[in-house]
Length: 231
Image 1: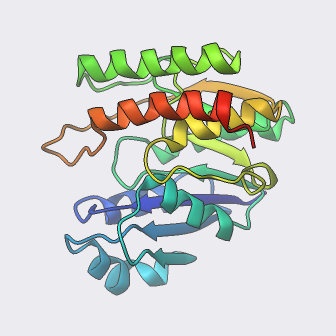
Image 2 (image 1 turned 90 degrees about the vertical axis):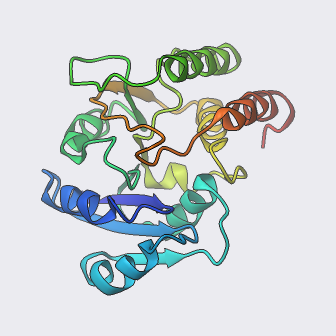
Image 3 (image 1 turned 90 degrees about the horizontal axis):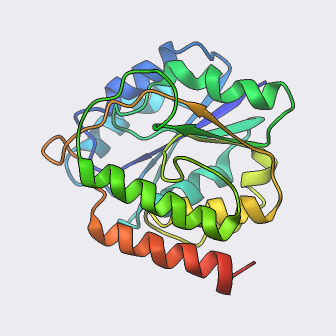
């Protein structure tokens, strides 16, 4: 069993080395690490080329900033593992929890596993109230269209069987990826599980990037990929 870890990266010079160390030191050893740099301008690229390139399987570089969805689209195409997981380049999610997400697929009970920040007993940093409300509203709206009962549609930690994620045409370039992929795996009748994970959220001062405009795009994506674009 090999796990492909896709790390979309944009202006993460403060954390990219730290998250790589955490992934490599984690409990899952048979891994393929693919970093996609989405045209970082803060020095991240220099770190990737000088310090990290020799430690990972692939680094792919975008020549203009396109967004997280575009970076994931690039990374998914290159994955060769049996399973594929998304790992943000910050330190909000803990690679030590990969076994939690792998367990349902290794038991042949799931095709896709989401790591929920709203279930489970792990530590959760207390950050933004309205972000939590926004996440729960978007998850509820998505569930109404997909008729599945997720608790955290917007989570970073999504694990897929490789053949499933590579069979999906991802169109969203930014954070609209989350509702788009949820709509498309629900339509494929994938066996979807959730597991509770911990969450070490960061503030905007610490580099958080998602904003209110992304929330409106997520609403648009929920309607688009559940009603109008059912490819």
